[in-house]
Length: 248
Ligand code: 76R
Image 1 (tube, protein in one colour):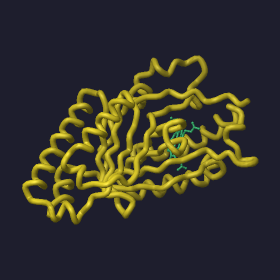
Image 2 (tube, protein in one colour):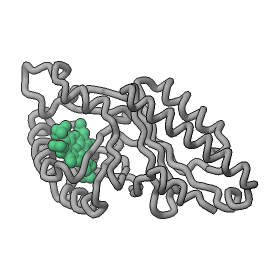
Image 3 (cartoon, helix red, strand yellow):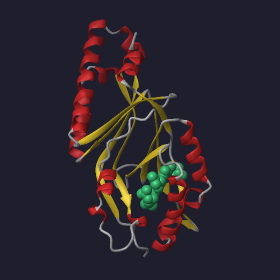
Image 4 (cartoon, rainbow, N blue to C red):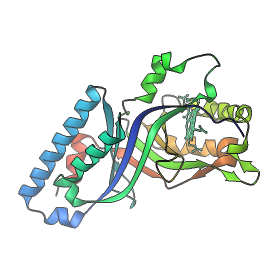
């Protein structure tokens, strides 16, 4: 049996994708729309307060294309908190104008491929910050799930730790060239959701997603061992952009 990578696990993650029922929203009484917006604003403030208190983080982005209209990505200490937060949102007036488009449950994950032997990563404040990150408020988000392939000769899980470490090193070197341009948050979802990982990327410039993902396709880890699900891409919803989006 090959040696499993050790993972460090941080905050739990919920990616909650919704579509808006635009005709119901348009036909709603203006008073109902105002109440819905006020309540939504108060939820956003509450989530911001959790982020300020370092007990979690939330990212709010509009999604381009027909897969969804927006995503709320929440990070919290426990799965229970995520569940409470999701239910509280479902009870809001605004949520009544939305339909579920997709969701993903996972946990922020770092693996030990790059950790030098004998080093306790939990003593490193940078590692702790990466496990419990404040989600960037960069212009764009990109989310997709992925698996490592288990097929014939291309079986990631049958490779030795040494072989995987070498491959992950090359993966990391490509990734590093995008430092400052793309921020990646890898969340593990084995046992939680339909794929093995969620990949969430943030960028100032949307084109950097395409460049990074394309470049990685040629790297052996992705070329040979990567299987991917649906991609979601979107734009940051600032307060101003949100009110413009919901303006009738
Ligand atoms: O944690 C680290 O930064 C060290 C190096 C590293 C690891 C261990 C790293 C770096 N990644 C790691 C693990 Mn990654 N990553 C992806 C994707 O589209 C594709 O082809 C793949 C999707 C992207 C775009 C990406 C970006 N990475 C992982 C894992 C877990 C694998 C496992 O445990 O078997 C997955 C699924 C995954 C997938 N990676 C980086 C990036 C970037 C940009 C970096 C550089 C980070 C930096 O140095 O700041």
